[in-house]
Each structure stands twice: as C-alpha cells, then as structure tokens.
Image (cartoon, rainbow, N blue to C red; front, side):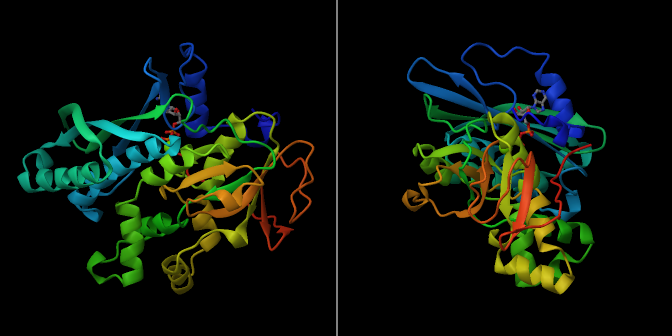
Length: 346
Ligand code: ADP
Ligand code: MG
C-alpha cells in the first residue's frame, strides 16, 4: 500500500468498499475483495476466478437510449472484462434480472436482450449456467456473476506492479466516454455521423479483451493488470494502492492512444480529449504494467502510456519525477499541473 494515503484519502464508492473489506476475513489462500475477481484455489492445479457487476436503469443505462440487444451484450461484456483483467479463461455466467412489468410482458424486448447476451457469450465461450428472475416496481436492474479459470498462480493481480515498470494499455481510450456524451445529449440517434456511431457502439457494446488477457497472463514480464472501467485516472490508483512500495506513476498525456473518431468528435464538439481519455469510464481496455526492459518482447498490441515510480526513483527518463505519491501527468516530457478525475459512484 502507498504510505501517503492522505494524498488520495478514499471517499465515495471506494471508501465504502474499504469499510466493507476490513470487516471480513478472507480465507487462507484465497484472494478476496480488492481485485477485479476473487481467486479460489482448486486442487487440480487451477484456480477459479469469480466476479459480479450490477447494471441499474438510469445509473448505468437509459432504457430508450440503448437497444435491448446492446444491453444484453453490455451486461455480459462488463463482467467478462473482469475475467480478462485477471488473464482468465472463460467458464460461465449467472444472470439475474429484476424486471418492471412493462418489460417482462414485452416478448420482443426480452428476446432481443437475450440475443445480445447469447451472441457475446458464444463469441467468448461463457456458458449461461443460471440466475434469478424477479419483478421490479419501477426500474430494470441486471446483475451478472461471471466465472473463469487460470492455471494456479498465473492470474494477474493489481498488487504486483514494480517500481520502474512501464504502464501499458490495449486499444484506445475515451471512446466510450464520448459515446456516453452522445447518449446523454438527447440527440436523435438515427442522425449520427459514422464517427459518432462508432463511439456510441464502443459505449453500448464494449469488447472484453479476453484473448489479450490470456496472452498477457502467460508472460512473466507482465507484472500487474486490471481492466479500465472508471478511467485510468481512477483505475491506476488501484494498482498503486494495492502494490507494495510504490510512490506513484507518471502518465504521458501526449502518448495516450486516441482513435481518429474521438479526435474528430472532440474537435467538432469542443470536448476535452484528455479529460475523456483519462477520466471517462467504461472503455474496458486492459491496463497493465511490464518490466521496464521487456517491451520489445511483448506480442500483444499495446501502447506505453507511462511509468511506475518508486520512493527513491528519479529514473523517469523523460522527466525528473520523484516522490509524487499519486499520478503525475506529463506532456512532451514536462509536468503539467492538470488534474484528471476518474468515475466514482456517490
Ligand atoms: P470492478 O470495477 O473491477 O468491477 P469494483 O471497483 O466494482 O471492481 O470493486 C472493487 C472490489 O470491491 C472488488 O473486489 C469487488 O468484488 C469488491 N466489492 C465491491 N462492492 C462490494 C460489496 N458490496 N461487498 C463486497 N465486496 C465488494
Ligand atoms: Mg474490473
């Protein structure tokens, strides 16, 4: 854990999770609260990975701004992403629905939701193994529990970053945030440009990086890993907090991978591309750290976006960043005083 917790004294969602976490003891040999999945050791040389995520109407989605097919896909995708975050192989899922009467009685809506859920489940090899179906007075609530597995000791954790590591991400950042922006704009979704359709689809139908996660988990030079659900400004702090003996991290703002579609959208709509790519949630790309000398050997497409800093380090080659106790943002090698905030419920 970082010494200078005061730097990012936790409140809101993550403060609440910490209060829960410290009241419950995790059984010996298990990994409990604090990572993308819990890890349960098995006797056959494997370990079982488990995670659960809930999607609540008007908090996570607006019913008339997402199709039932997309919502079925997304409900599974955000959960599969937590298996990807550990580098796990797919096993199965449980799906629980609290349905308002209007949806429960719409056969078309239900069929489309399950078509989306089934397509992504078949695409990645997760079997639907059970769940629960109940009524809700008003809002739709969807809960998915997902199971995966890894060879014993191979799953990647948030807690294993090392000072000097390079920080990497798969794919591009901020697309989903722009998609959310479009969702909330109230605009007619039938009148969007091709770029906007792309961004909206990144938001409504994210890609869990299962294959990339499995490939990264097999490589020892990959140290820590998680998925990006709340933006790197928030998610990277989890790696810093869970790992031992780190001071912080530098992020190279000019190196962040940004899609052409997002650049164009921000240019035309006067949006802050840096805020979207660091602080907007739901990209579901992988955020991982690798040995500082090992980048050339990495065979998974990625972008290096920064560096992990230890308490005594002044080895950031692009800038002298020491004892930062948090995240420092650099632009063209110079420290900026910009601050970015990731997503948190509450
Ligand atoms: P993710 O974004 O990867 O889904 P979260 O930020 O939702 O992870 O959760 C972080 C950790 O806290 C996970 O280990 C999760 O299982 C745990 N957690 C979240 N809410 C609760 C809760 N109400 N009770 C117990 N554990 C929780
Ligand atoms: Mg996660």
